Image (cartoon, rainbow, N blue to C red):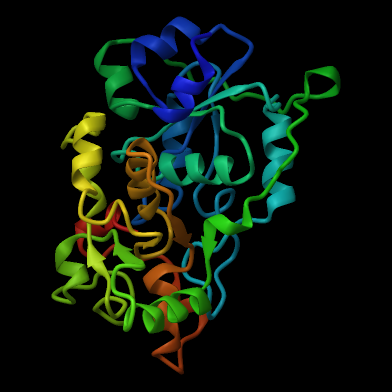
Length: 309
């Protein structure tokens, strides 16, 4: 296995790299495909065809907890439940985990951030995702991996990093602080620009953005095919705010913001995730909101909502 530190700094691996290491017992692939429009679609796709040996993590069921009136559409998952799933995959602290999806890293990056939040730095992302793998005609199968038992179980032990998360109270405090210290705190809105401006809102009940936030759409981290842009481009993208002491990143529900957090990580920038994001923020602006109001968009929602979260 190549240098640990270099892979932690740049966690992107190619399809060639994964194929070369696929039989390595210290490498485990996880399929994170998902669709906001059809929540069962990712699991269905996995059951039909996936990278050999890959397990599956579902955004709603594994990478988030049930929706409540507040907290956003994808609250943090139960840490022990997720950790047990990882152990059942055979993951220990020295395991390299390679995550992939078919949506320009939007769901795989949430898993990448979560595993690192839990202290697992050996977490990688497949460049170009599922499409890159299949375009090269690399092997796939539909074999369902059974949970590992006995000595084959992993020894993963979560080590949460609470300072990686911003609550709504932290965001409110940041807004107040920024009124007199404009160069000390920045809120980054990761949604596409039309949602940031409030011109269109296909998912949440209110359009707009958190006061004072600046817009860096998550789609700018990759090209249209889902391949990550070069490290220099990631650094250049953040040059206006890279010296700011505190950065809080959000999106619609704490999912695609993780793509921006990946970009910042590659640029050597530390930032916090407001997990509840806009869906949590706007829930306090709508007093009659119920959990049903903040669930996934219906099929009649805009097609772009299939990746925006």
